[in-house]
Length: 384
Image (cartoon, rainbow, N blue to C red; front, side, top):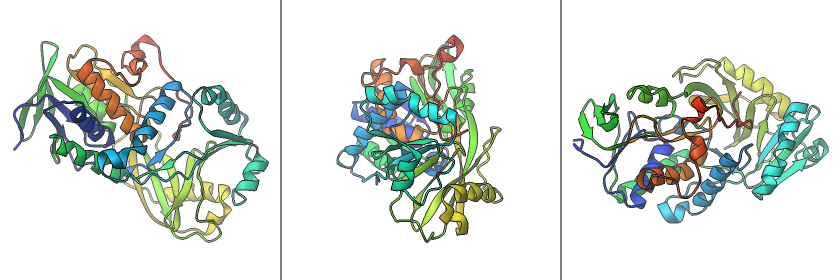
């Protein structure tokens, strides 16, 4: 049975929602309720590739990554679950003058934040990773600290730790309305009944705009399908390879068990479609075989589709919602939500409890930036 009241209600049980629930409780919140319409981590988090990187084109995203990496280093000790962070490195390949200029443009920013990013010529890439086709490569960056980790481990780790601190988590419990009166949040409505609460957090991932409209708010987040395929065993490639980001093709490749993970095409139009289009394997395999010729003989054995939650400037939308007191936003991560979730949970919990984020200045990420024309454009993304 659902409780009738709460101090904070969180809508969404992905990595951002459970991280925020944990951090709220760790900072002293006594009555936090999290509602997930399906199962924890079953949405975008469970369908992401699990990548984590330091390289971005804006200071705020780099700061989020640095904070997230620091928290991941303590995750097993703090939360009690090993997140399985494998630092295989990210190798970003530029195949055009525009992409190369983009990588070079980030150099002062990386120096400012002391990121261990190497700038490589095509010859250096060919020498270190001779199995990569580099004839069309103009240059590259490599960051050995980057890698990937387990979405399931992170979600369940935060959920278990949150429960130990008193957070109540309800799965299969959709929010069908957010209750508002006199410009202030009153709580939420579910099929099982209402929960009165002075604070509600929208952490609904690709459904952020749907939840926003419940309070009369337009949140510019679009759900965009991206497909991922896994190949069978691939002879001719070493066991340890970096995560290869092909900026020109808009795709990525990395070792996954005995096979390889290949990105499929990204939809152009928004939808909530998460079915797999198996014909898209042709698109994925053609690009993979071009970059890694050994993949030409690979056989696709499985695949899945998930949803990016894309904002207009590829940055998160964080903070209190204008005009609706008590309604908070943690949306629009544009493919970076999972990797930034340890940091996001910290700063959103601070916003809710203290009125401002004390760990990072996230004021540039408020929703009002779109109306004010102060957008932050993240150009180093894995989506087109």
